[in-house]
Image (cartoon, rainbow, N blue to C red; front, side, top):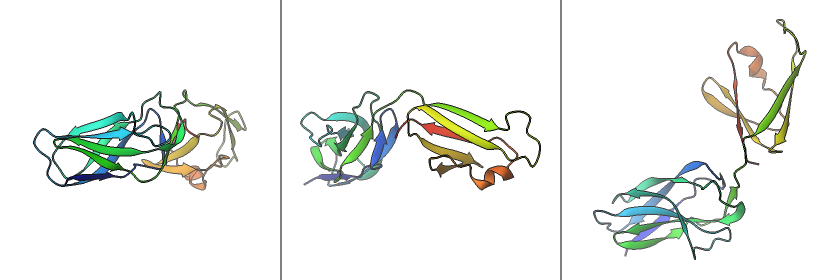
Length: 175
């Protein structure tokens, strides 16, 4: 008897974003097999599942790239499962509810700083960040090609004063 299990890529997902869903299968899957990830509705029901990613494979372990549709409704009870075609097998769901945040328009952020004119060396600079949408975005700083999480309210990390090159701020429109 063939079985398939999968793991959720995260407990909270965002519409319009791509993820990888790891799976483990037991049994024999024939040439031409397709593994597909199905997304439940917001209550966890697979009555009308939505296929969000597929791969052609007979491998018993792997990862399936998926994209949460941009028009996916927000909800806290979503689940995923993996199904196969040859032979037809319906896997168990990921085992816990997932949050999907709805897509938002591009984040709008306003950055101001004082002093607002030319900044001389050793001058204390205060940055103020305000958002018009979304109200509570997730922020990350990028330093030396590594993303670092930043809590709101935004307090600039001490290492910012040590660097001489630009720092990138990544805004993701999910709360």
